Image (cartoon, rainbow, N blue to C red; front, side, top):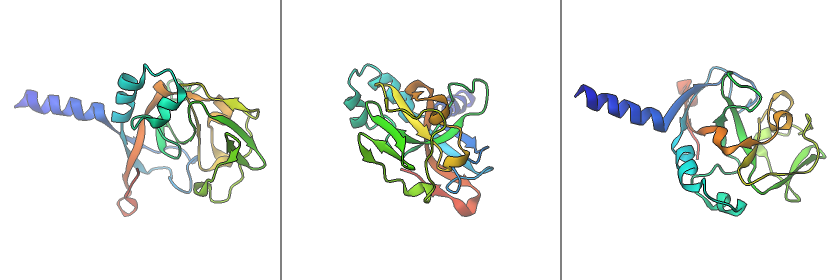
Length: 179
């Protein structure tokens, strides 16, 4: 019985994670101290099944790859050893991304971003047109003026993405599921 319980614990721990938000970069949608559950299943399946894909459009069609607008937890390239970050997927593999005129432009079209609540998007370093490679994502916080994100450290490789947020479970009066 003890071995079965330990095996179940190991399997569940491999598939889901719990994280406490320790930054203001996703306000007003997520706040410091809130806690979320992250599905690691997408990342695991993506790395196993999609890791051999060679065309950028195969990432977009995969149900396991991150999709634009999803909220993910990841380890930032320039933040080794620090807490994982929470950001929103903005740019997908193969996208041409530009930041100008207060907004984000994907493949020549301004991205509709109601989650930023009217905040202007400015440049923090990554200002030029950027074509994302087949395993890169551009991740940004919803609180654009106060977010350390891909504008500062560049695109994030898919193997650095821990998983996508599926549930905010704390505080209890703000429980919410995420697609």
